[in-house]
Image (cartoon, rainbow, N blue to C red; front, side, top):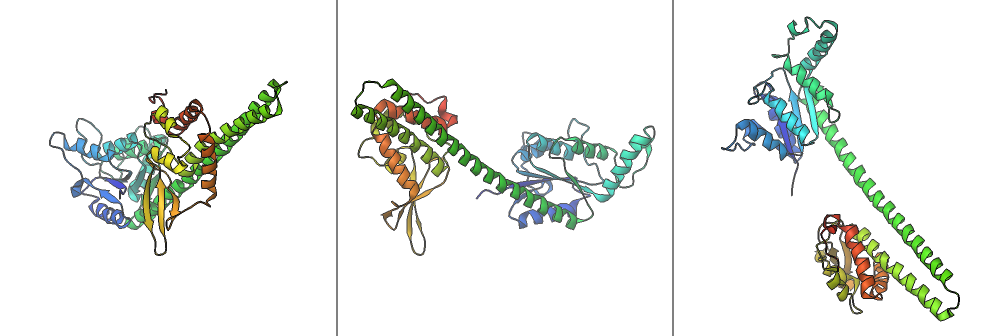
Length: 356
């Protein structure tokens, strides 16, 4: 199972104990800490060690920046510190950054900012007791000036850091769950809009047909109305599959050949197998389930329980009925529906699918 990798960036020697505590804290919640002084960075023999550190940042999902009183070594061919360069790489990669500043340095930075404004001639000559280089304040200002991902929190000891990071990561998880919920709501809204669109088109086609009929007999009119209803129902099959299985990507398919395989004897489940859907068997203490899964990620659906088809499932009844409508269409009509199916569910492939 993949787990988040957390890059810890700071000067090493003055914050050694802090880094050790962070390492064990990150491990305790099941994440993987990445610290350069712990051998977690691969130092390629073909690159400078500083470049290797930046390369390692790319492979991480979270970034903790700790700013203490020591500026640290400079990044090669630059006047920026190594820590500053690692931070810039995290910004470039759009990685969530959690910045913690030693409280004494944080207080000095406030004094520095006030003197920079009120005493511009002498602020650089003032001694700030908690730092060894005034560039630390420039670094803090750089973090603050970032338009996003720029929160800074002071700490007195590791307990302050642990409490802050726990709250932030809990908030991040909450945001993630809320966003997933919004995505589900968005999918539902899109489905409702699609249903409204189909209903509107059905009404439009019926009205156009009825207005065009003057001398047709009743049987011909009823047959045409049935054909329009059937085609609209067939198009619903596409929506139902996409929504129920949360499909986002499908494999590349030959639509012409696929339309030929939609015959009277095929079921909707057989059809999905042609789209590379696959089955797994799940066993609990009381039941044995057959679950049908989409090929490239999505939601599985239970199609059998203890060998009996899940025929009373309302979703499956709708899928079966709309697929029966699809089977009644001629080949060209089937291809038109399948074309929209693949375009809707797989934008990645829509430009390169060859429609016959």
